[in-house]
Amino acid sequence: MNASPIGIFGGTFDPIHFGHLRTGFELLQSLRLGELRWIPAGNPGHRSAPLADATQRLAMVRAATADQPGFVVDDREIRRAGVTYTVDTLGELRREFPQRPLCLILGMDAFLGFESWHRWREVLEHAHLVVAHRPGWQAPRTGPLASLLESRAASDVDALHSTLAGRIRVQAVTQLEISSSDLRAIITSGRDPRFLVPDAVCEIIRQTQCYARAQPYSEELNNTA
Image (cartoon, rainbow, N blue to C red; front, top):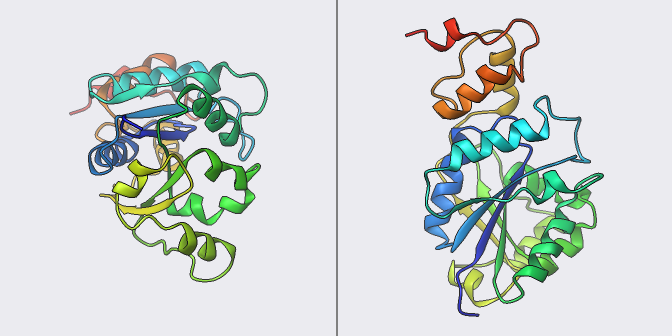
């Protein structure tokens, strides 16, 4: 292996916000990733359908990440028909990059539900797991996930570079307590999401009215001082 790992940051991004972006930026640096791929989910099987459609969410991710070197937007799940599963995406990436370590990024809350993922045991055959530590969440101390974490723990970042897959690293990041569901509630109530999402994302939300439910997010709100 002669290339840095590829980070994989998936999610519905409904919408993408500064909490996602700060976490991705810090992990790009602290893990010494060659690149960080943002992969918006197409038709996620684990939750209800996103409010913004796939095209709108992809546009928001592209707008939010456009100016950051090392950030790459990957639309493969948007293009894929049917329900999208992380294990299938990782399998595709492993075939494309057979000699690059892959690092799948997820929060501690997602890791605590890891056993419910589709073909979850295969995930570590394709990639490392990087669990972004979030205040208020604790790693499991008993049960299968605790055993998995103990047996596969990566004590340092170099372990993610020296092997292709199969390790788990819990990595502290600066957590901005921003919730996509809270953001949607703010927008659908007619309030302005400024300073929670990038300005370019605000503009897409305003133009498309993709979260308009109770009342539209208007030009007047967007220009409020």
